[in-house]
Length: 124
Image 1 (cartoon, rainbow, N blue to C red):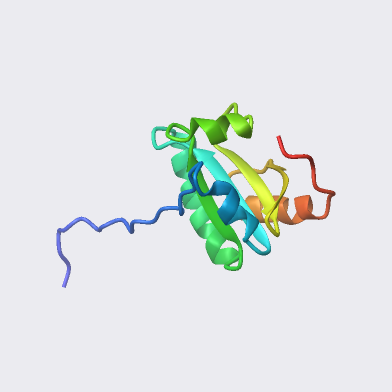
Image 2 (tube, helix red, strand yellow):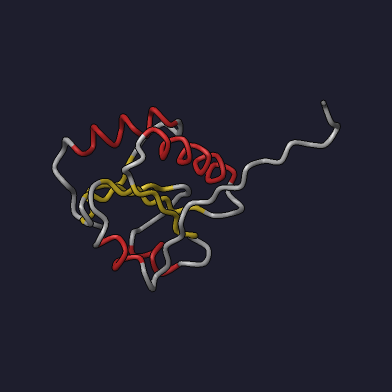
């Protein structure tokens, strides 16, 4: 039976990190962790959240987080974030690099794997 009711969009959000828990939570994360600095008002950030959802399906062992750059200016300044969204790669709790990738699931996955083959960079 068909209905005229609009289909509900599935609600999904990235786990949030704040200045109070960022370093402690990242430090205990094994393996690959991606942290997106974004903003609710940023259209590109909304798109990247959807992309991250698919990345999570492709790489279920990876940890994915978001920092709201508007409400967490201390972290935003610490990581020298100048544009949104910005993604940082951590490996086994340690900063690895700022990730530069096309905002599509396979692009993020490929860029992450390629970045992990390179030496870690110094944290901002």
